Structure formats: structure tokens, C-alpha cells
Length: 235
Image (spheres, helix red, strand yellow):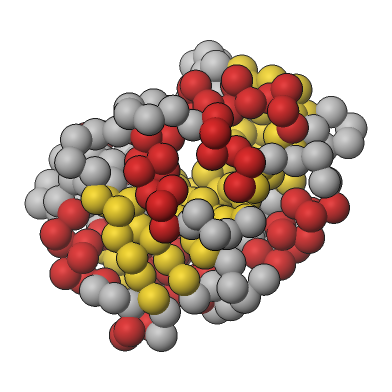
């Protein structure tokens, strides 16, 4: 498990957050005296993850300048830079060359934080031999802005439901995944979305969900970023 690589999706434009974070990528938004991305990296490093691939795009030079090769954190970092916006799936496809020899890889959205036990997540994934990917999900009271995940009693994902805007509870995709090597042929070249295109088409091939109960927050909006200041400061 200690040899698993983590791919971090950190190339987003962060349009909704620009009123409060205007001159840097949103993953470098400050939480106390550290950046949001540093908190995420340190959370993974504390559980034995030492190899990272960062999928960069918007203001990528700031991320590379901040993290370099990872030596400061006793990790190794490689960069996969998109020259044009490719979406979550397109950015991953571009980074595939860095994980060609890896049977499994962790994938995480760089603008959300989920308190996970990496070892437990990997054990869940290995226990479901049919899974080409495992998706961490969390139950929230207001799932309307996210869209929901329908899961059967065995943990297999049956469908992804579009966001409705209705304030109802439900399971949502928390942006943390384990990918088998087999899933890469489901991801097309060029711009595409994991959430809207790749995952819905891959349901029949075997996607599983593990419900997490730790803290979850994304910083996509100014209100959530303000909330993150309080929730993540002690980490």
C-alpha cells in the first residue's frame, strides 16, 4: 500500500472562488498558515502515500513553485500540465503515462478534503474484485447541489443522478477514488468529465462505493471556503 501513487486534480479555474481568491489557483487558497493543497498532501503523507502526480493547468507555475519535487515534505511529485482545459477525465488521461505500471492508483480532487483511512479504502477496493474503480461517498443533508449516487446493498453503484437543486439528503461523490488499471480505456482523449461522462458509462463495468464518515468539505464557493477556515485550521 505504501507504494501507491496519488494523482491530484489541481488544474481547475476556480471561477466561483475568485471573489475571495483572485490571484492564485484555488488549491493554494490559505487555510490558516498553510495552503489547502498542503493540508491535503500532508493528510495523505501521514498515511504512507509518498508518490504524487499533480494534474495542473490554471496558474500551474504557482503550484510548481510552491511544491517543487516534494523534497520539503519527504515525498516525490511529478507534474502533468494541461495546455488547455481538459476537464477532470481529460486531465487524468493526460497523466496516464505516469501510472502505466501501477495496478491501482488513488485519484483525488484537489479542491475538496475528505478525512479518509487510505488503508481501509484500499482494503475495501481489493475485497470487491469486480471493481474497476471505487468511489468514496459521503451522506450529506443537502445533496441538491452535488447530484447523488445510487448504491445497492453490496456497495455496487447502480446509477448517478444529476443535481436537482432540491434540498434533500443523499449520498454524494466525495472526489476520492481508487482506479484499477482497467478503467483507463474508459477515459477518452481530449476534454471530458469523470462525473458527467466517464462514470455513468462505466457503471455496467463495475463501480463500487465506500461510504466515508469523516469530515468532508470542498472549497468551490466563498461560503464553503469560509467554513474550511474553521474546520481545517487544527489539522
